[in-house]
Length: 254
Image (cartoon, rainbow, N blue to C red; front, side):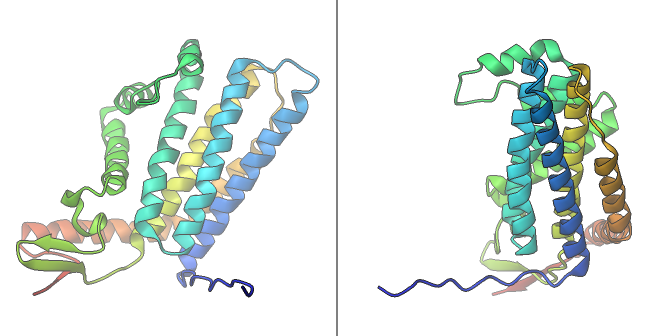
């Protein structure tokens, strides 16, 4: 048998998304450097269970973030959303552990393979005391979870094609806006998780410099600001179209 080859898949040509993924990659690299710094310091100082769990959760989150970057650059929109569910849950866990350290033993002792130690609803309630912020966070999670489970109620968000009676429905305009939104959400989720881990490590006595993380997050936020404003305007227009009885972004074929 001759040498096997594999034709590379084409990457996105959307420069905003490429820049966003580059900055998300920088966040990931910065987080890995922070974890390595903690591990190096741990050779000469106590490494308690709180600091260890923060390292474990962040390492898994960075694996997930790397895969999301690849999927977004390959314009695999739905699969990126699927992994966002995992990334969001990891972020919820480390942030909850930082805020309620007395609950960390529940995570350590957990042995039930059919459910996580803390339910998402419980985590959202604890992490977002403001009702509006909590509902916004819940909406993001439920959106991605709907796609993960291929819920047919999501139409072309969850499937390449939709079916309405005898009509096949496809998106008329594939604008890549969701890819941009998912990339930004992934970067923001990793940032929030890392900020919680930094607090855990600082309480344990580790010396951590967050400047590189903060700088990259500001760059990501700035680079995506105009794109996100445009996305919100489109969503607002879509809502108005729906109220007027038209279906935005969808074409129908017999």
